[in-house]
Image (cartoon, rainbow, N blue to C red; front, top):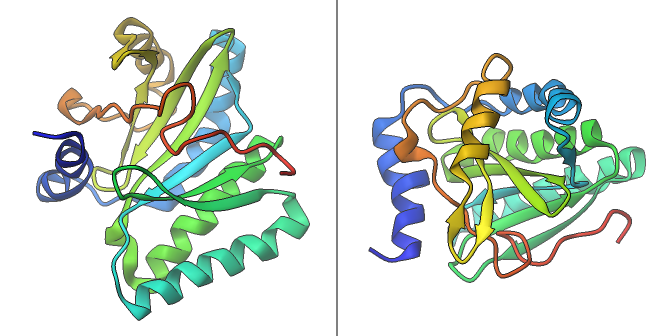
Length: 207
């Protein structure tokens, strides 16, 4: 099974068939309080960046929905300063990448994007929201799966390896604040591209 097929199985078709609860953009706000715990207890600080991953579809209606997401984020940028870009990765998945030095504004903007997509009738195309946190040279991601309605941690270490002990520590510390996926088969590793993010190069606030 190739990487693209693995993503599709973990975050897409298989997860949708096995879903125990529907993903809810409102759950993204749980990360605002969890971020305080991440920094206070684990020394992981928000990386001023987040991203929303979705699978596109070739239709006028979907293009209109994507344009509406852009319009909502454009309108919000004047108030929050959150900048954004649309990107497509090497596996054909689409991303809305956002950057802001204020984590709560970042969470709000990701929520706006996901909620707009859902209200436009394309909630089923949402795959995951990704929030990186940094401690020294380590990057830990909290990933929210819209197909499973739950979070899971991911700590890549390079060469397609990940730090499971840190992931379990994150699960233990944040388990009372986030709805964490119990079935670890769905803790799918969204590998960064080299030294970049899963969505490519980091987007800087104000860029």
